[in-house]
Length: 67
Image (cartoon, rainbow, N blue to C red; front, side, top):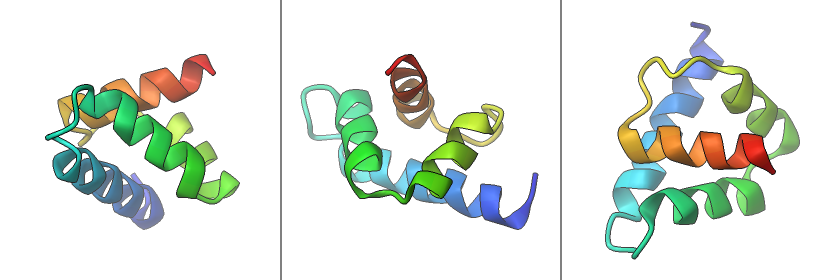
């Protein structure tokens, strides 16, 4: 995994951790990534394997892949 991908995985995990109080943390994480991440960042996290993503971040990526 590249340094950039590792950084994006860490960021996605941090976002998911910070949104744990939401009724649907995975959807909230997906919404945050959709709204605030650069398209290149989104493309990299969507292309990344699940390695290192926590459960809610992984679900968020799956949600984004369906959109």
